[in-house]
Image (tube, rainbow, N blue to C red):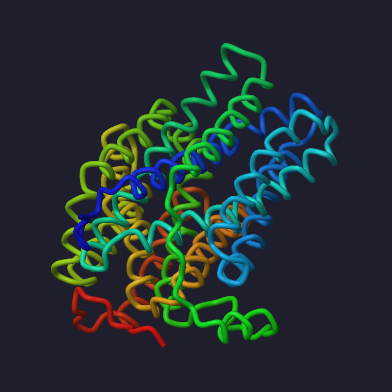
Length: 399
């Protein structure tokens, strides 16, 4: 008989693998598609950047509606429909051989990514016992952190040793594996009254698309994601400017290693000691990482910044999802997840655009220093909304 507090069940292991495969596809395209678009369709860097970024726009659209309709349609039907659509669209890259076709496929793929990402995270949150929500969420999102390194590495190997079409075949195989794994997952269903399902079908209120209890932590992660987008998008030209381009690759390797090493510890700490024991130190770490980047003049400082960023943003991104779920009613877990990731994705999408406009005026160094203000604002939002002493247990009942 399964213990109600058991974490490592077959279903949780498989849904975590699903999360890894979803994000490895995401990061393969994020790091290789721009070069493909410029080489194949003679796009300008701006046009190629849009081919990459339109995926995020589609993802936001998918997440906006998925939080509501995953419960209206039913979790199992929604999950498998999204998996099938993901498999179909993975072949779209091979079928549509024009710039406009690439834009269309990227947008549609983004929408499906938003649908599937919300479904996977919703199922995972229901599989994790409430008493181990921080720990379980830490392990679940660790798959994403590993994908941030594995995705670019896989993309580099495929494009160096094979034709770029190998990337498309690889992602198609990945989509098939995701569907196959899902056949062995027992999908937990939400205990939502029929009256509530009927109301959701006919209602278009803002609360049908966003969970209000998840908004504060989601606003905080939105601001933090803008800061991290500045690192991801502009670290390479900055390291070149500073005379150590070799720092770029190792920066993210160090980041992932530190995330892997710290994730189990901080997840358990959140469950046992509450949010503040994790979040206050993490804000300080991320703030410090941006200061170090602004002053960076050589390898050691860049690598130190990677360690601090992992212990800051890496921790808060993962465990913020646990906070969103713990703060929300149990019957609105899907909406809490979609609310959180809509804001996180929005920050990653808006960050490069806004910061790219600022860099010509203040430079890369000035950008990193100015982002400390954004981290401070995110910390202020957190302190106002969550800063009082919190019990490690969930604060919300089903309502």
